[in-house]
Amino acid sequence: MRLRPIAALSAAAVAVLLLAGCASGQGTAQPTGTAAADLCAAQAKPGEASDSVKVDGEVGKPSKATFEKPLEPKALQVSVLDEGTGDAVKPGDFVSYAMTAYNAKTGEELATVGYKPGEFLPSQLSAATVLGQVFGCGKIGERVVAAFPASDTAQSEVYVLDLLGTVPTAAWGEPQAEPAGLPKVKLADNGAPTITIPEGQDPPTATEVATLKKGDGYKVQQGDYTLIQYTGVRWSDGKTFDSTWEKNTPATLTTTQVVKGFQKALEGQTVGSQVLVVIPPAEGYGEGKINEADLKGETLVFVVDILGAQSATAGAATE
Image (cartoon, rainbow, N blue to C red; front, side):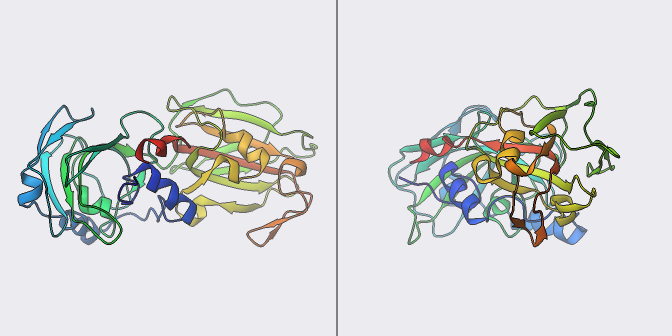
């Protein structure tokens, strides 16, 4: 059974959205007062169905919900059980959250996901997403009950969701010793890197990976989904050929859908880390092109910030 695919509320649905290019990363423009107000107004109203759900358990831990069956809401209903005590979220914020889902007709528990590291990618809030309609501009620590109506593709369902925190858009790990013999990295106030190639130095002939900041989060495994920021430059001239910072949005990808050298930069690293990787042509783009930029025979240098990761097997719990 597959849960309702609502902006990463189902781990299985997340995988589908990632492959379709529709998951986290829709832009990080700073909210205006109107946008912030729109997010507050976006939260769905409570109703008889959502108000009838009784929930046991602390915020931040798996819950147990009970309700008179069946529940048959005609529209999305959201009841706030705990308003939270942290900062209010804003449009464009990337948030971490967790949930337990139930069949609204039978009361059967369908899945509990997000309370352990590596079960969900952070997702971006906006008034246009279902996640925005669930949490609105709530405070960190908010717990809600969301009752979803049945549709042509999904049964009616009940979710108990916890808003756990916001996720920075730049690596936040502990700075490490500067690696010798590799390009220098200078960070702007927002975390965007400037990469300087060593003058007159030949590039390495094998991929080299150095951790610039060491995060303490989930360790990325082969095939995992990741949420990252990166900048890539050519060793030959130091010019940038691709950067999420220039696009103003992190990227979502799997470790096995990138070139070998980039894969080595991700797997084994922890969430919150920043990684410098130098990739020779054999483990880069070789004779190919990317983003209309000619990278034939180029040694590539990337600085990668790992903002989140989701295990490739996380969706198994929701099937």
